Image (cartoon, rainbow, N blue to C red; front, side, top):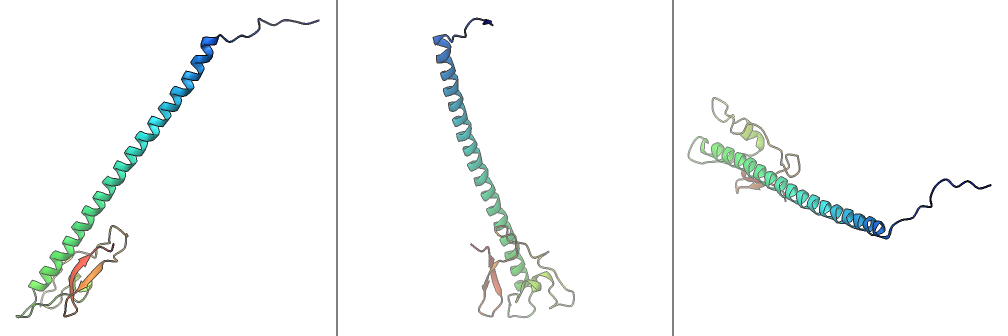
Length: 132
């Protein structure tokens, strides 16, 4: 004895075409989302790189201003460059110690204070640059 539970399931031909269209549409939407995400990531990366470069330039300018200040405050006729970063932090050549630089800034490119130091002919620091 067989029991029939319902009518046999048949799929109409136009419904089969709609299922394929929905799948294809979802693939296009997914591809568009992936491409837009990539564009946003590239923009974010370029912005972060630009901000890091601005920070590097600002910190190099702080060192430059401190070196100029140190050199100009040298007593006597012969102007000297600082021998080390410590000289910029606390200049004890005069009766009242002077600070030309607040602190030794870290290099934003590396996160450590590993700056490239350009030496003057007398051995002092004439310029500070970011390491490549």
